[in-house]
Amino acid sequence: MKISRLGGVLEWCAVLILFIILLWVSGLDRGSFTAQGAHELSERSYHYGPSKVVRKVQVDQDTVVFLGTYKQWFSADTVTWSHFKWHPSGGVAGVPKNPETPLAYSWDMKSTGSDGGLAKFYGYVNDPDIVTVELDVVMEDRGSNTATSGSERQRISDDRMFLFVWKTEGRDFSWQSIKGLDREGKVRYEHKLQ
Image 1 (cartoon, rainbow, N blue to C red):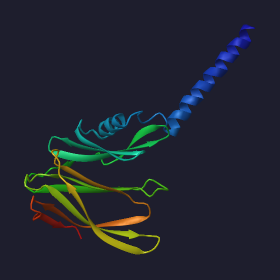
Image 2 (image 1 turned 60 degrees about the horizontal axis):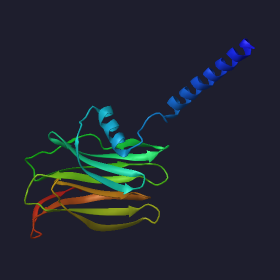
Image 3 (image 1 turned 135 degrees about the horizontal axis):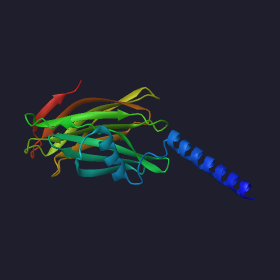
Image 4 (image 1 turned 120 degrees about the horizontal axis):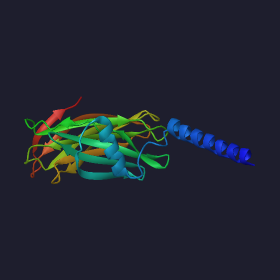
C-alpha cells in the first residue's frame, strides 16, 4: 500500500514538473494581469525608467499605449492583451525631448498578425506657443491599390505630448509632414518627412 502511494506522489510530481516546463516554454508565465504591470515590466526589461506616465490611451480593448516621460526623454509604450495577460509590445525606448527644437517626435509600426498591426506617430512639444500638432499622412490600401491623403490634428494638453495611432488593417502609411500651430492657427514649426 505504501509503495503504490509513493508511486502516485511521484507521478503527480512528474505531472507538476511537466506543467511548469510547459508554462515556461509557452510564454504563459510572462506578462501581467494589469496593463500598468505590463508597462512596468516592459521598462524593466529595457532598463529604462521608471517613467512618469502622463497619459494612458486605450486604443481598443486589447491595446493600451502609455505616454510617459523620464528625465529628458519621452516614450509611447504599447501593451497588448493575449493569452489571458497583458504583454509588452514595443515603443518603450526613450526618445530625447531635444529642447532646442520646437517639437520632438518619433514613430513606430508593429505587425500583430491577422489584424495587421498598429502604427503610432508620437512626440513631445517644447515650444509653449504651439497648441496644436498637425500630421499630413497618405494611407495606401494594399487590397485596392488606392491612396488617400489627409491631415490629422491634435490639441496639446498640459502634458505637452501628442499621439496619432491607427490600426493598420491592410494599409501602409506614409507620413508627409509634421506641423506645430499656434493659437491663431499659424505654422510655428514644420518639418517635411518625405
